[in-house]
Amino acid sequence: MNKPSEKISTPQILFGLHDILLDATGTDEIFTADTPVIAYLRAHRSWWELDLSDLFVQIEEFFAFRCRLSEWEELFGRSIARRSRRRWEREFVPEFTFRVLAEFIARRAQSACEPSSDRRAPLYGANSLMGPSLRPVTSAFPLMVDR
Image 1 (cartoon, one colour):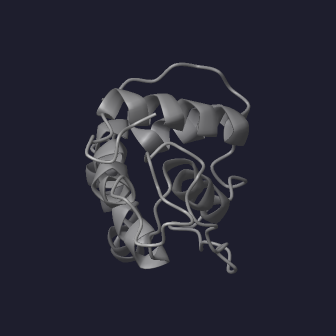
Image 2 (cartoon, rainbow, N blue to C red; image 1 turned 30 degrees about the vertical axis):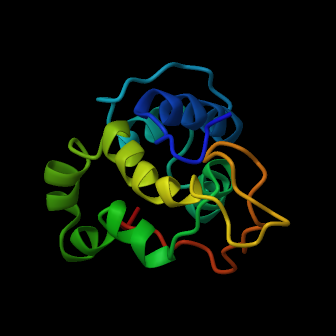
Protein backbone atom coordinates (compact mmCIF):
# COMPACT_ATOMS: atom_id res chain seq x y z
CA MET A 1 0.00 0.00 0.00
CA ASN A 2 1.30 3.46 -0.81
CA LYS A 3 2.19 5.80 2.02
CA PRO A 4 0.47 9.19 1.80
CA SER A 5 3.68 10.89 0.61
CA GLU A 6 4.37 8.42 -2.21
CA LYS A 7 3.44 9.25 -5.77
CA ILE A 8 1.75 6.53 -7.73
CA SER A 9 4.06 5.36 -10.52
CA THR A 10 3.33 4.88 -14.20
CA PRO A 11 3.89 1.09 -13.94
CA GLN A 12 1.42 0.94 -11.04
CA ILE A 13 -1.14 2.86 -13.06
CA LEU A 14 -0.61 0.68 -16.14
CA PHE A 15 -1.06 -2.43 -14.00
CA GLY A 16 -4.33 -1.05 -12.64
CA LEU A 17 -5.51 -0.05 -16.11
CA HIS A 18 -4.82 -3.59 -17.32
CA ASP A 19 -7.17 -4.96 -14.64
CA ILE A 20 -9.85 -2.39 -15.44
CA LEU A 21 -9.62 -3.04 -19.19
CA LEU A 22 -9.64 -6.80 -18.68
CA ASP A 23 -13.01 -6.36 -17.03
CA ALA A 24 -14.26 -3.86 -19.62
CA THR A 25 -13.06 -5.63 -22.77
CA GLY A 26 -12.60 -9.25 -21.73
CA THR A 27 -9.07 -9.39 -23.12
CA ASP A 28 -5.92 -10.11 -21.16
CA GLU A 29 -3.67 -8.73 -23.89
CA ILE A 30 -0.76 -6.68 -22.62
CA PHE A 31 -0.23 -3.08 -23.70
CA THR A 32 2.70 -0.76 -23.16
CA ALA A 33 2.83 2.88 -22.14
CA ASP A 34 3.25 3.75 -25.84
CA THR A 35 0.22 1.77 -27.08
CA PRO A 36 -2.48 4.12 -28.41
CA VAL A 37 -5.55 3.83 -26.14
CA ILE A 38 -8.20 4.15 -28.86
CA ALA A 39 -6.48 1.59 -31.11
CA TYR A 40 -6.33 -0.86 -28.18
CA LEU A 41 -10.00 -0.35 -27.36
CA ARG A 42 -11.01 -0.75 -30.99
CA ALA A 43 -9.01 -3.95 -31.33
CA HIS A 44 -10.41 -5.62 -28.22
CA ARG A 45 -14.02 -4.58 -28.02
CA SER A 46 -16.35 -2.78 -30.28
CA TRP A 47 -15.53 0.88 -29.81
CA TRP A 48 -19.20 1.65 -30.35
CA GLU A 49 -20.38 -0.72 -27.62
CA LEU A 50 -17.94 0.37 -24.92
CA ASP A 51 -19.58 2.57 -22.29
CA LEU A 52 -16.90 5.19 -21.74
CA SER A 53 -18.70 6.79 -18.81
CA ASP A 54 -18.63 3.41 -17.04
CA LEU A 55 -14.94 3.07 -17.87
CA PHE A 56 -14.25 6.54 -16.45
CA VAL A 57 -16.06 5.67 -13.21
CA GLN A 58 -14.13 2.39 -12.91
CA ILE A 59 -10.84 4.25 -13.33
CA GLU A 60 -11.85 6.88 -10.77
CA GLU A 61 -12.92 4.24 -8.26
CA PHE A 62 -9.81 2.11 -8.73
CA PHE A 63 -7.41 5.03 -8.36
CA ALA A 64 -9.54 6.87 -5.76
CA PHE A 65 -9.95 10.26 -7.42
CA ARG A 66 -12.76 12.32 -8.86
CA CYS A 67 -12.88 14.05 -12.20
CA ARG A 68 -15.42 16.10 -14.12
CA LEU A 69 -16.84 14.56 -17.29
CA SER A 70 -15.55 17.59 -19.20
CA GLU A 71 -11.98 16.65 -18.18
CA TRP A 72 -12.47 13.12 -19.56
CA GLU A 73 -13.92 14.55 -22.77
CA GLU A 74 -10.93 16.85 -23.15
CA LEU A 75 -8.54 13.96 -22.51
CA PHE A 76 -10.25 11.85 -25.19
CA GLY A 77 -10.10 14.72 -27.70
CA ARG A 78 -13.81 15.28 -28.01
CA SER A 79 -13.49 18.92 -29.08
CA ILE A 80 -11.20 17.90 -31.96
CA ALA A 81 -13.56 15.10 -32.95
CA ARG A 82 -16.51 17.48 -33.05
CA ARG A 83 -14.68 19.71 -35.51
CA SER A 84 -13.15 17.03 -37.70
CA ARG A 85 -13.31 13.26 -37.43
CA ARG A 86 -10.44 12.91 -39.92
CA ARG A 87 -8.23 15.27 -37.95
CA TRP A 88 -9.07 13.41 -34.72
CA GLU A 89 -8.18 10.07 -36.34
CA ARG A 90 -5.00 11.42 -37.93
CA GLU A 91 -3.60 13.63 -35.19
CA PHE A 92 -5.15 12.66 -31.90
CA VAL A 93 -5.70 8.89 -31.92
CA PRO A 94 -2.04 7.90 -32.52
CA GLU A 95 -0.76 10.32 -29.86
CA PHE A 96 -3.26 9.39 -27.13
CA THR A 97 -1.25 6.61 -25.51
CA PHE A 98 -1.54 4.78 -22.21
CA ARG A 99 1.33 6.97 -21.01
CA VAL A 100 -0.84 10.07 -21.58
CA LEU A 101 -3.73 8.39 -19.76
CA ALA A 102 -1.40 7.34 -16.91
CA GLU A 103 -0.12 10.93 -16.54
CA PHE A 104 -3.71 12.19 -16.41
CA ILE A 105 -4.50 9.66 -13.67
CA ALA A 106 -1.26 10.34 -11.75
CA ARG A 107 -1.98 14.07 -11.54
CA ARG A 108 -5.39 13.37 -10.04
CA ALA A 109 -4.52 10.32 -7.94
CA GLN A 110 -1.63 12.24 -6.38
CA SER A 111 -4.12 14.28 -4.40
CA ALA A 112 -5.88 11.07 -3.38
CA CYS A 113 -2.61 9.94 -1.77
CA GLU A 114 -2.78 12.81 0.70
CA PRO A 115 -4.39 12.09 4.06
CA SER A 116 -8.05 12.97 4.23
CA SER A 117 -9.19 15.72 6.57
CA ASP A 118 -11.88 13.30 7.71
CA ARG A 119 -10.04 11.06 10.16
CA ARG A 120 -12.80 8.46 9.92
CA ALA A 121 -12.08 7.72 6.24
CA PRO A 122 -8.43 8.45 5.36
CA LEU A 123 -7.02 7.78 1.92
CA TYR A 124 -3.78 5.87 2.31
CA GLY A 125 -3.03 5.09 -1.29
CA ALA A 126 -4.22 6.01 -4.73
CA ASN A 127 -4.78 2.38 -5.66
CA SER A 128 -6.49 1.41 -2.43
CA LEU A 129 -10.23 1.00 -2.32
CA MET A 130 -10.48 2.92 0.95
CA GLY A 131 -11.48 6.21 -0.64
CA PRO A 132 -14.87 7.87 -0.47
CA SER A 133 -17.70 6.48 -2.51
CA LEU A 134 -17.73 8.14 -5.90
CA ARG A 135 -20.73 9.46 -7.72
CA PRO A 136 -21.78 7.59 -10.84
CA VAL A 137 -21.91 9.41 -14.13
CA THR A 138 -25.63 9.49 -14.79
CA SER A 139 -25.62 10.45 -18.44
CA ALA A 140 -24.04 8.31 -21.10
CA PHE A 141 -20.84 9.68 -22.56
CA PRO A 142 -21.78 10.90 -26.05
CA LEU A 143 -20.01 9.33 -28.97
CA MET A 144 -17.06 11.40 -30.06
CA VAL A 145 -17.33 10.61 -33.75
CA ASP A 146 -20.04 9.54 -36.12
CA ARG A 147 -20.19 5.87 -36.92
